Structures are given as C-alpha cells and as structure tokens.
Image (cartoon, rainbow, N blue to C red; front, side, top):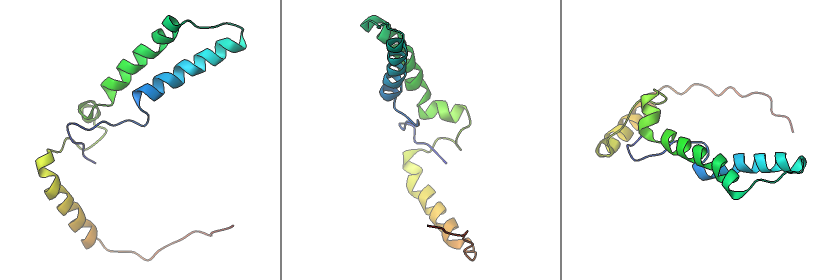
Length: 102
C-alpha cells in the first residue's frame, strides 16, 4: 500500500469527526439539563479539527509506517503495471467457500 504525497488517509473526515464529538457532548449535557454555548462547542471542535488535519496527511501515515511509503505520481503507471503483472502470474487456487445459509 503506497500513498501519493497529496493524498489524505482517514476513516472519517475532520469536520465529521469534530461535529460528532461535539454532538455527543451536547446530547450528554442536554440529558443533565445543561446547554453548551457556541464558544464551548468550538472549544471541543477546534482541537479535533487540528489533530485530524495533521494526522490524515500521507506524510504522517508514512512516518508512522502505516503504509509502504510514498509513491511519486510519476511512478504510478509502473507501480500499477508491476502489481497487475504479479496478480496475473500468481497461481489461482481452487475456491473454498463456507456454508451459505439464508
């Protein structure tokens, strides 16, 4: 698995994650009869936004060795060609399926 330098890797976008965490806190306090001001909501969201934006960078994921490194976009065609060649030359085993029940 390689990343291009401009790519972003994350399961959830920064805005979505920040909004989700803020919404959880708002609902939690609403059950207790309290309410958050916009400044309080921003205080929850801003650190999450910053952290997500920093950690979704391909440079960060590569530095943590979560992938096999950065791929120069110029080398994409060669990398795809080698991958397809390796997949086409790999032996294909007989399928082993489990029991399907409906």
